[in-house]
Amino acid sequence: MARAVLLATVGLLGCGRIGIDAIPSEAGVLGDALRDAPTDGRAVPTAICKVDHIAFSLPPTLAQLAIAGISEGYAAIWLDPSGGKATQGLVLGPNHAQLGAPVLPVIRGTYVGGLADAGQKLALATSDGTTQSTWVLGRDLTTVEPSSTLTGSVLAHDPFPTDDSQQLRLFLAGAGTSVTAALLASDGTINTASTVSHATTGPVTGVACANGPNHAHCAWTEDLPDTNGASRCTASDVIMRPLGIPPSGSALSDDCHDVRTSSGPSAADSVFVVWTTSDHRVQGRYLSAATAPVVDLAAAGSAPRVQFDGTRFWIAWLDGNAKLRLTSYDLDGTVVPYLLTDWVPRGPAAFQLVRRSNETVLALISAFGLELLTICS
Image (cartoon, rainbow, N blue to C red; front, side, top):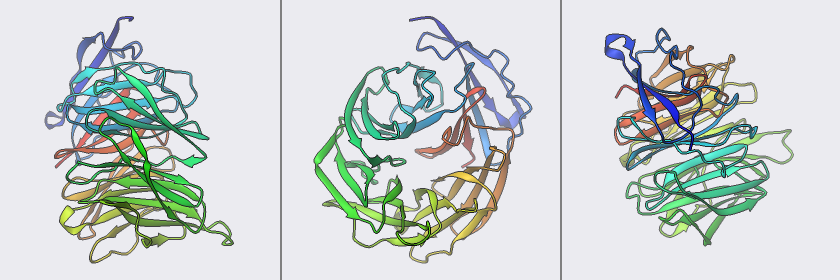
């Protein structure tokens, strides 16, 4: 394997400056290192307490990023939907130090749904637009095995939810006028014999899931027939024991696209769902015992993400100039916006919010590499 030099930049924002340290690596080829990556001087909002930067030159013009908290720390995978660059993996420790950076040329596709720690192995879902593939990866990302393929299905976002016990994990997808769920084994394989389905009124166009208390939480969008293009989103529990999707859910909006969801406090069995509207607003709704109304999070935006940090929800999205925005939503309904105008991801799928233990991170592939913005707890 060719020798590569990888730069890990750890920014400690208390002193107002980001330091750069060069760390040689044999783990994988990320490209020629950017020795003077211009991280200094980029504005960081008060919501961000730490910045970590792993630099590499010539990232894809558009990137699809998946990142997950795992027992070792974090695992990240990003692919180039054009196929021009090989899929890249990265394993980080809890402090975001690099543990490995294997190249994964066997994994190809135009979309990535999500990555999850199944127990023995890691599970990944991708799609080429017509066929959905799941993959079983070694915990250090050095081994990759194809697991299953689905034709004509809708790739879910975060399709491998679990519950607080983390003893069972699921695999969700859309299929025609239904949402399907199956059990995922600890070795990363799908138990197709366990598959159950929930019928929808119209064709499913999107699915997103999140870990729940003693069940999973999912939301989906469907095109409603004879309604001039109305797109309804519905939030629902997904029961694990026995596996099933209840026949009723919470309909949130009939103008709902690009839906994402995150679970709130386990005791409240609550969930926050975000989406965009046909006129490009970003909206959200907190569902709990006392359901809050729909809230407008942005007058113009796209590609929303949401993650609960144990106290409040964080919502990230792109503004009309493809630059990042970040907003916190407290359980009492307080909304606080933050600017991230100097942080520009490589496309609408090149950033994610991820939580591991008590840490919540906004991760993005930018022109400078993989950047991890740790949100203040």
